[in-house]
Amino acid sequence: MLSQIEGSRAVAETVGHCRPQVICAYPISPQTHIVEALSALVKSGRLTACEFVNVESEFAAMSVAIGASAAGARAYTATASQGLLYMAEALYNASGLGLPIVMTVANRAIGAPINIWNDHSDAMSQRDSGWIQLYAEDNQAAADLHVLAFRLAEELSTPVMVCMDGFVLTHAVEAVDVPSQAAVDRFLPAFQPRQVLDPDAPLTIGAMVGPEAFTEVRYLAHTNQLRALARLPELADQFAATFHRDLDALVSPYRCDDASTVVVALGSVLGTLKDTVDGMRTAGMPIGVLGLTAFRPFPAAAIKTAIGAAKRIVVLERAFAAGAGGIVSADLAPVLPADRELYTVVAGLGGRPVTRDSLRETLAAAFAGRLAPLTFLDLDERLLRAAEEVPS
Image (cartoon, rainbow, N blue to C red; front, side, top):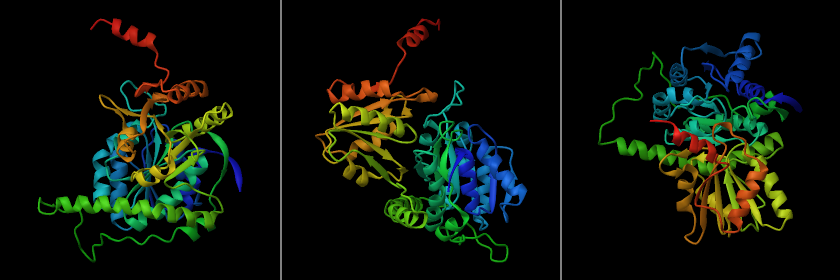
């Protein structure tokens, strides 16, 4: 049933319906409302058979999740920005051990300078950590992807991040059909861990691996991620049959069938892009939008199919690699045929608004062949000149 609910609360209610057994959390904006709501569910008794662990840091949060998962519990945590970076060492441990932990990342810029607003710098910085990364376009997708994430993580025994834009989604109140407990129970079986640390049956996990086998370990981790490419659409079909609504698990094409220009993006900016493209279509410009839900593993084949015969591909990046360029663009370039034009537009860093007017102007330039290969949307030349004038 649809209800007006804050995005963070919708995610917390949904995670609670997934019946986690251990939740470990350290508050950092903009994810704090999620774990606050979950702690209230545990304290009130609405979420039973769950231990809520207050920890002293984000590194401790992931460490507790690792210990809980290794001991056979369904484990969950949430973080953002510097908090995600603080747990980076433990992220690699979780994926290397094959532990099916689910974590919400409320995407936020990385400092310095300090910035608490939204972009994708935090999750993108951990793109090679071995975690599956799924990005939500809106709060309905954010809630639904958590149910999918627990199922996928536990089937493949690998950790999953669900990324939702900080403040833009986490603090937005909108209509969401929060998955019911009965429906979640039908879709998500009880957790059956593949490996359990048990004093009565001692074993070792995460032991030292030398040069003779380390490559094989990494190869198996890679192939496990690739298995997710095949499994995600299947799970999305099962989700639709259970919850009676669609869920895009890999990509979400919008008006791409006859498009000569396709804009690729992740997260909440897709809504603004679709509105912009609708207006440009009215003016006779065949432009489409391709949303990426899965970023890791990278859905190369699905992207290539969705892009079709489009001549120009514009990647709207909410993060970038300083000294190199677009992050998503770098992954996308090898997928494209040699005759396609690829443009990178860096937009919305640190929460700067991405407006329809700016997008319309930029996409019109791409359509006319006037867009530079790398563009920073709404770059303030005045600020740049002022910075150059500061004495060193």
